[in-house]
Image (cartoon, rainbow, N blue to C red; front, side):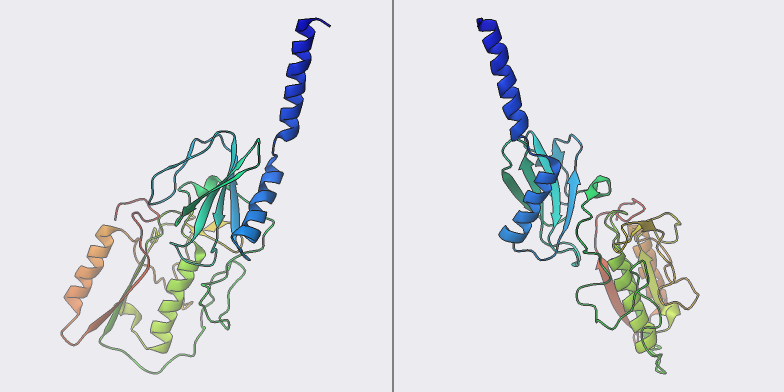
Length: 278
């Protein structure tokens, strides 16, 4: 056998062995799930994969994370029912060896909407982990109105400002809307706040774009403006720096020395859904 034929056979054998050793996407998913269950001891999580040829992962509020060559790239949300920030991971699986590399993060990738969620898990969110079990939600996982008996009390000197930033449609989870709706219903129905003395700045405000991410279904809708089901829009403006200043100007002109203000900030971010700086 000639030297040329031997080299050809050797290259063919190496190519065959390389193909046999390659880790498929499904195998990589299995490795991540095993890692999540047996190493991180997670009973509940959400898993996303990015199959694009990316060289780095841009996670909110930290330096970019370099992607090792020839790796599958995953994002593991380790506490899917918790508000950010919380424990999460960027996980790389080597396509050749199957080795697992983990980088701890406290937020999600900026382009998470472009990642593919693994649908094998049933971790849909229907409320904050601390939300009382008796509360009811609709098919989209949004808090239903009339959760509390209406009070006969009134708080004439009470004002409230509710702010929920949103960051982006990807991160504007329905749980933030649920939190705001719950706060609003409690203020009006339980404590007797005057709805005309409650200022609500949420995400992109009255914009009709699909800014709200439904954790229960994975889809997107425009944030409902009515927080307590009385047929009146409660979200007044988007959560931008200018609108926050406007709200405080309104409060300053209306409040007296006998008034008090309840400030509720559900989500603090660098930008709101509409993309304006805060």
